[in-house]
Image (tube, rainbow over all chains, first blue to last red; front, top):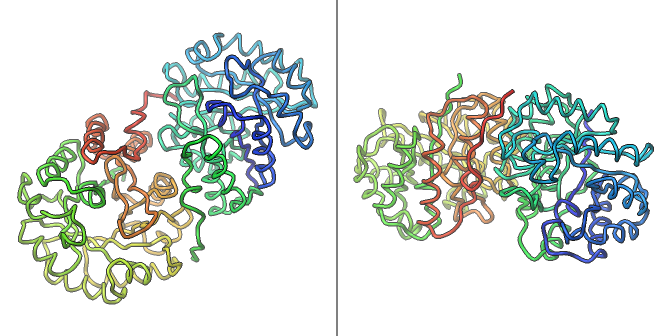
Length: 292
Length: 292
């Protein structure tokens, strides 16, 4: 199976730490990513605008999409109230964050892991099938609080599976993953997961490459590598969509994404947020062929 | 075989594109790297000071080393005259650059590849054993002039082996390598080569990881990821020593290098050159354990 599915989180995980952009600009970004071939885009976050000002207007963003219920669009919801707002906006795919780290959960959402798992169960009840729910698990490969291991992550994943979610995505929230850690966790939970990798230590692409070899076929990325949790000090940007697309092209995987159409999106996004982006291929360009 | 040998090229490939630093600072950098456990350091380049002002005073650098003839130290020589100067300084390990790309060779050294191979033969005659000669081959995984392939690189490597050098190091001069290209070339020439990787497209660590899996055990790096050829537009920095050391630690390879001692060297180097360095681990720090 050589098909790899990328979900671009730039409009959500990328923009959430930036100065607020108008919803119309965020909608244009989502549509541009879809036009470049992204099969999935995380378009908004139904969080409190007080907590994350850049995500204000989530319902406006979803409502202005070509088809709010299109299976390409995902929105993050932090709790049951967020799920209700998201579903009312018309979106039909929800990401829900839970944490594998008690310390990070306390800091990030002021809940124990057990409480956040209860909340996930509640969201699943609110957002019943055919709505899709993807549980994104923070700190699966290390945490700032040193309170996770392969075994503890596998235990959390097993509990989440018991909650009846449609997908699980393992997040490397603070960029502590390595090929060994990826293998440790994937060996325990299986390759039917997504990976949400951050590039804090320059390892995101290496970890994606290692995961591909283990059979993982879903990855969260962000155009230009924008991003990083505002709640996780030192969190680097997301794995840049362009950088992973180039690797996939070189390795012969099919992503459906056109790198040539993707590159100008990063340039535009850089202008939109007013600073350089960490993505490397957007700066250096695509590759000429190298025959065997 | 789990021993991996790193050669830090920071004092040469790193500093050559910067404003000139006094030889005493360069000597201190070399000694600090050796004290952190680097088994090999490229300490200087015996090029024309007019062509590369930052490398002026190469003989002063070598002469001020604890032991100029120590097998840890390497110096780049561009031609027979450079080799004579290097040997007169007391150093006993020479790197010599040749190119796998006619276009790059013409631009970089104004010679055909055949002419540079003839020159390599001459240097080998001047620098007879027990002096070591390492032929560093530019553009082994792509060139700005699209004139290389796995086959053409293998042909150049075979010719170099015929010249009786002690080592061959394959350079990704403009950061076009990928795991596929690494495998293509290593399959043809064997794993008994070094790799000199640049991070133009953020792929250096991924390529090193792929090469490790193929049996490659020698890597050129630069502390902090400093570097990039002043003659190759868009060439990114070298693979950061710290970033590779962290990966090696995670994977269980032995490098003999102490990451804790290495990190302050990058900080000092950043102050010395007056700008941030691209290395990621020096910014983000080492990893806490992640038990299975």
